[in-house]
Image (cartoon, rainbow, N blue to C red):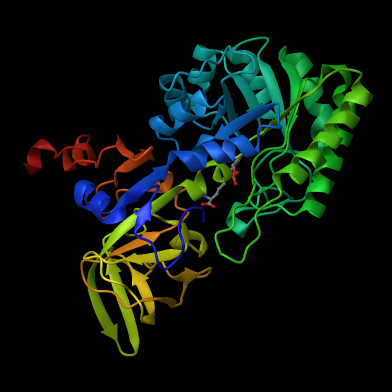
Amino acid sequence: MQNLSENNMDRFAGMSIVDLARRHGTPFFAYDRAVIEKRVGELKQFDVIRYAQKASSNLGLLALMRKLGVVVDAVSAGEVERALRAGFRPDSNPPGIVFTADLFDADAAEAVRAHRLEVNVGSPDMITQVGKLYPGAPVILRINPGFGHGHSRKTNTGGEWSKHGIWHSQLEECLKLGREAGVKIHGLHMHIGSGTDFEHLAQVCGSMVRAAKLLGKDLEVISAGGGLPIPYRKEQPRIDTAAYFDLWDKARKEIEANAGRAVRLEVEPGRYLVAESCVLVTQIRSIKKVDGNVFYMVDAGFDTLVRPAMYGSYHGISVVAADGRALAEEQDVVVAGPLCESGDVFTQEEGGVVVTRRLPVARIGDYLVLHDAGAYGAAMSSNYNTRRLAPEILVADGRDTVIRARQTYDHILQFERIPDDLK
Ligand code: LLP
């Protein structure tokens, strides 16, 4: 939670939230460009910062990343398309785009072939497949070291129940597959989940050093993956990025000594670069009492921000008075959205347990600001209940730029057709 003091904020990145809300309508996502720049700066020790654009893939944000010297990861043909349109080049050094997945769907296979993309493969079959798409393809192997870590079971990406990556004991087999397929396996990647503790990370680094030995002199690049956590709650500590780099750098140096060559160290964060830069601003449209509980009913739902409903994720919430009055008295409230579904509640824990949040007493028309909404916020929005995707606004130097306009109903409905006999 970067520039907002929870429960009491009326400005964002130097701009009045009420003004922004009046101009853009609610709900909307607003990103503070300065926060993104700061987070990128904190990871500059790595040779390459590869943004996992799945966290928030707006073209405006991708263009900003490019300007800051960051390259990207793409996990679908659509993300490849975005990266190309934002000006990234697959043939730059290091490659501006790397395709990462555990399978190629038809679109992705075509994108890899057409743009000759470097591929980070998460399944052995992909090695043979990429050799057929284009011989000589540069390939990185994503290894599942046998254990994982995540903020919830749904975000844990290692261990024997994870669908991600190549099981660590199959590495030699994969190198053989690579030789047979005529591809150039030159890198190793380990992304073991969102959330990191250093003891666990040291284990991952150890696995990387062991795996690297098998590649010997062919190894040119290692990637630490993403998963750097951010403090969603005030009391959570901020990750020590220097210590994080040092652990990986130590592993890299050991790998370089074993291989007798220089090895590039990449990091692949999504959340860390964008989560704290963004707020979701929504308006209270109704306040009701349900027995003893007070509900603030707002105009954003889990179609706008799904993380609380999907993972029980916590997002800080502030109230902004529409008329500028001081907010003093607080009460325990449930914050819920407009969807026709009982799980459409922002104050809930994993497993769907609805809880209350202590917030200032508010009125209809006041605004609620959900913090740290920049990662997996707009990117995971949907049209559920046929609601339009909310706009995204980039704020820099006291100026707000719409980087995604509010969707129209024509956009939502353009591909639907009524059969002739039903007209
Ligand atoms: N690299 C790979 C291969 C990944 O699978 C992911 C995330 C990342 C990098 C970036 O992870 P990050 O640095 O953002 O933690 N929707 C969930 C998170 C899913 C993460 C999926 N993979 C959430 O809202 O928390």
